[in-house]
Length: 134
Image 1: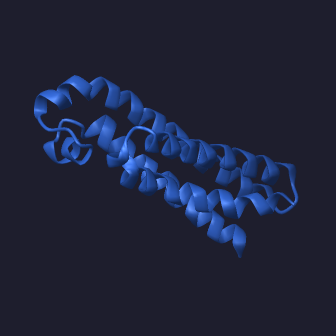
Image 2 (image 1 turned 90 degrees about the horizontal axis):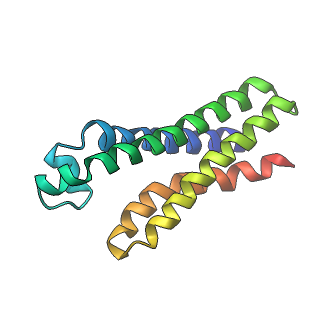
């Protein structure tokens, strides 16, 4: 049961990071999006466009890592080497997402809400996946 809840948390974290990728790398020029990220005008959005584009792909790659890890975990079967490798890959992806959220908290109080949104699902996934190593 724990592995199912851990998988759901990890999959939701991956889905959130795909959504962030879409906002940063595909929809960045939309005022609705750049305002969500705290920018004040279209000029600021244009200035930061390349940075957001690149950052969006980082989020996508983290999501892909988690999805690949989950696929390996479930395809491997309990106690198999593939399942263990899948747990490790999933934990690496979730840990990286969580670390990015922690770093975001160091950039100022106005990013605290975003850091919590970005980090809570990976934190839940890490907490639930770690005991599966024993």
